[in-house]
Length: 221
Image 1: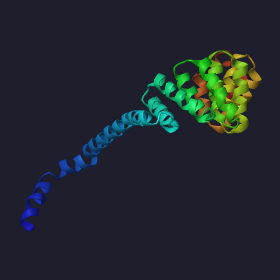
Image 2 (image 1 turned 60 degrees about the vertical axis):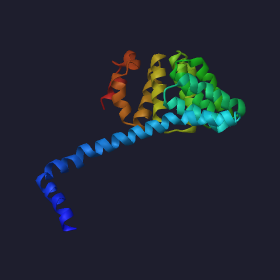
Image 3 (image 1 turned 180 degrees about the vertical axis):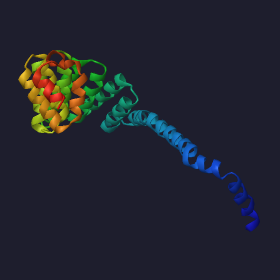
Image 4 (image 1 turned 180 degrees about the horizontal axis):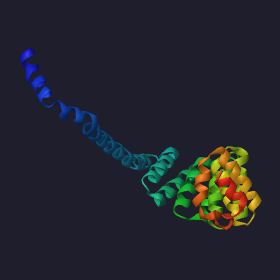
């Protein structure tokens, strides 16, 4: 046993710094890289597994729904939407599938269709704040600011501490020229999340009130 260990001990002693650096830096990085490759491989196989299941059971809701989620993760949004559509044919009252479908559509900038999906989600589950919030974003991007505000307000009724809904309401009120309500909502957003103050400093949505004393006092506080 001693003879077997002796050269190992000598090698370590002679190369101690190199080995320690390898173990503390490069080696974990290499291991981490291989684990990442393995994870990506598994992610890419999820849709394949889902569709393999569908060849056997085409009415398998879980396979269609999970396949849609996996395709979103892979950036294959059109395919994901098609997969959600199949899932919803089987289970049309699943608010989560409607919501996920809406997110995929919004990422493709198909905003009208995204809003329709969010509408389906909240008609099934009215107390689900995420579709209300994302519906507000889509409406705001279409310039329908008053409807966007109403949607954000629904999200806030369900989740009063949703700072980004308060912040986005402030943006909408600013664009509508309502300074007082813009400041009021921005103040609430900052109370919930102080980072909103820093974001507001460079957000062009606030350009038309940037010189307003109330706004200056709020963001420079």
